[in-house]
Image 1 (tube, rainbow, N blue to C red):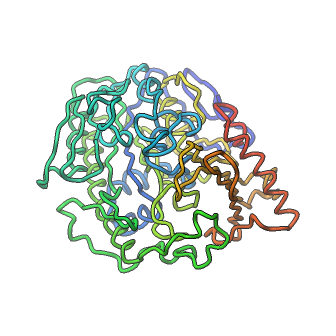
Image 2 (cartoon, rainbow, N blue to C red):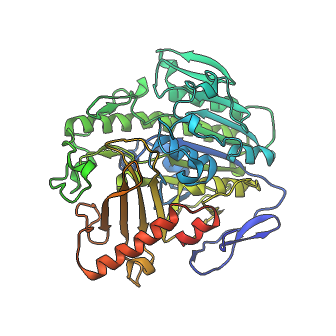
Length: 504
């Protein structure tokens, strides 16, 4: 157990400790188990998230989560790609421990997750919860020998309605192990169908505490062309959502970065992103998020009608970020801020006032946090930590260094090679006693695991990561890189408490 928590009456409570940010956290009676509803969006980056809120497209999420919950302002993905990030959610582990590095290939997709016998679902079920997953599970589910055409239901899930594709119309899914199809009628819109299934789950007469995970594929693009341009169709009722003439990423210094000479070899040949295509994609995501807000609103309304809202923890997250031309990149999976940063809000059961936590958290923390709320016990070593929630905020152990990685799978991916990065404000590594300096150091590897390139940024002077300092000859920069590289090597093979110790 992290030093930021101890057990009081069988539940975690905050205590004062070095390196902790401690908020007022009331203890919870031992005989109560909160319900947990988690809404995980797909490819929702911070720019679309913040723009959708500002435009009023997410009225329910704003009123129920932003205005009443705890916003974790610095949340990061251990690997900003769909399948690895979702497996990290299920296990609380870094990719080098759960073994899923990509969406497809040797270490990618559903089949790469070999240890699905122990996940947050099995822990919650063992703790007496009724569990359900509605929406996206892992990439390639429904099309591999392991899943038997969607007949396979991973352990721990009572209700199972898992999508095979990311299309908003004309899609298939596993309904309790039986394949069903939906067509192109307005009523078939995927996000709305998930809403209907969610309400069925909530209206069940089973009065056990429940753990419900809702994973619409919105606002993930339904299709992407060879240039990386894509769109997602909105719900028909939102087809008239007006387009922005320009999008926020275009205002960044890193948008279509002019000089790529400081970037690794695989990046230097990247073509300029088409601003028109990126605007089209960005605007389509804004419109698609409006149905996600309707889904969330319906869930909260049902909880209220049933008198269960005050006993339910609500979680809102995304699996990864996205880039619309920053550093000329279109997509996710990179180590830049636009890819690794995630929206994350948790509203504790009964919480009515908003708070903001600025300390660094990761998607490795989601499963341990949910388990701790339920009194569930993970039977694998989790790398993340439980965030202690309460009516007025959270207690967070002061993570000062984090790892983002794409471990080596021995396969050549020209535009997405194996790499690892540390992001640190640890004075022992930055040589800055104030803790204000944040450094980012990355290493890129070939298929044999040999170091081929490096990147090094000081976010205090270069928040856009437009000028890598890896070639600097200044002694203090060389010392910083050496210290960061040593910590990176240790984190790349860490597990469980060792990871938390290295992060702190």
